[in-house]
Image (spheres, rainbow over the protein chains, first blue to last red):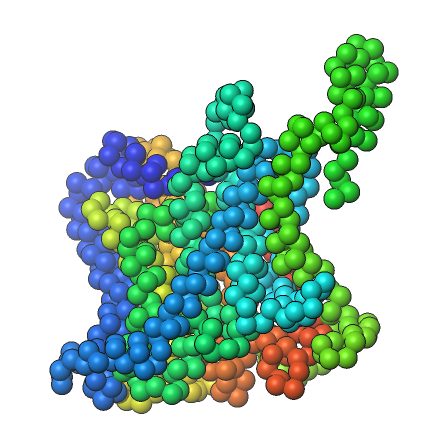
Length: 306
Length: 329
């Protein structure tokens, strides 16, 4: 079920198998010129549309506010204001909120990885008889839109059953619900399903218990899928807005995404744009480093949903 | 867990098997299973591995789903004890004058998002799949907006949509003699402006899905089409698109389900304004539950979210039924 589209593409691209445009087509001047110019046009369009707004943000983050307001598209008419960045980091306390975001993201990632790998291991490697019922329960949650959970989850955090202690303003209110991602469990168990069972049998015969099997054999073998799940878990947590807005009412604990809309009205434009630039720096750099995991993962998303 | 009762089920099986003498040997061995042997065979450690998932999903997924249904039939404000009110919450929502506005805006958003955002990623992916050099650059550029945090994307576009003649978009359009346009401040252009930003932010993910699907198209079909003398357009029309139809149908329903739950754009861009022109169903749910500082109307909020979920479920079923012959045939 899990296919790695990009690996497969690499295999066919250098072979002589033809795609939509055959080598013979490609040699025809009309196709070559038409397709070539369409592709160049697409590249220019992608640069303007995909990269343009981010480049504008980077430029405006170090441009004096007045210049951005009066000549938004001019390139530094009155010099560069590096001070925007330091003022955003220190005066607007973006630095503080930045670390809040990091703490929230790492906790959510850890909870997703623990839940998804242990459950995937139990369901796909240990395979108890009742696994199919649990899988069915998991799959039903995939069909329920997230909005259905919002209000009862919020009420549960304010007035938890059994414990007489509100979890408002506690990071646990974000970390723990983040673990309840059926998509992660499904993705990881599909991967575990495809691991060769002979290895598990061999390990078992050599006296390897389920815990060693998990930590020394299954986890090291699943690095690719763990990379994909980690990258998406961290990104999703960095992007999250509504849930942290609801459960973190103390501004000192809020992440960047929740603080930015509030900062907007109290800060001058140049500093605010610098704050926005800082908050999308981590996802962009992360994407450039782990590009393969990102692109493979979204392809996988399609394959599984399909 | 009432389904886990290995002792009873194996005992039953053993009894069953004893009647057929041919298979009497093996089951008699299994019939000796006791709770102790269940633990020795790893039943307990399996449960231990499942425990984090059962706890987290029980508390934060399965329980809230059930709780929604209960809350939609109750009057709750977290101060007084909840009282059962039957379907009063549902009729309250339906008779809310804002309800038809929110439904209309949400439907309009979903429709516009299909018009803007459905054909472009497909076209881009088909062209990109034939790129010989630096294909990675193309897909990275297309995907870049997806990794920008949505809050940053919305607030950035809010500055772009500045209605003054020196706003970013108005400056660009001014070069060709258009505008200035009011963008977010006019009832006519506010909703399309939100759709435009949302398309920018999400189209990259769809492009990557199509690119992955395009690699799965059987190359022999292209060769056969070439032999039959099909040109480029004919191959796109008669081979590529029919081969992609399964994925195309899925991305369409996923996009509709996604845009029916649009919240961030109307909340951050316009707070539903001007004059409720961008009030969506999710924003209405949010306003019921959290918009009132005096205490939330959780009954109305859960009732409306259940109605939305129910509608989406029925819509998806009808959609899958209606397109079944087309997607597989």
